[in-house]
View (cartoon, rainbow, N blue to C red):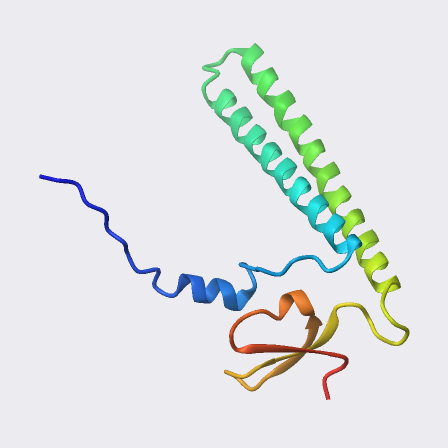
Length: 147
């Protein structure tokens, strides 16, 4: 027997991800967008760390076998991780609000930054949305309100 590589089909997963905007090749066009992206990525990593801490604490608790020291340690980790997670979520919400306000402040008068009309040629529908939410091969974004 010899090993060989199998290149399986993606079953349309890349197309679905592109249509939903999960995979984006767009780059930040302004300094506030770049800083907002960096802050968002950093807070995502910190959130993942808190999630792993909660998993670790759950593992400690389940394997404590009645040892009150291990149970107390696991409870402390869960409490601290939960508090940290709340702080990270609040920081994310505040930073998102601030960077959206900075981006809108930099927009020309009468036009909201990043908002426009997204039309989908596959369905014929249009929606008022952010430019970053309008990505995909069948979608077209136009600055300004939908008519």
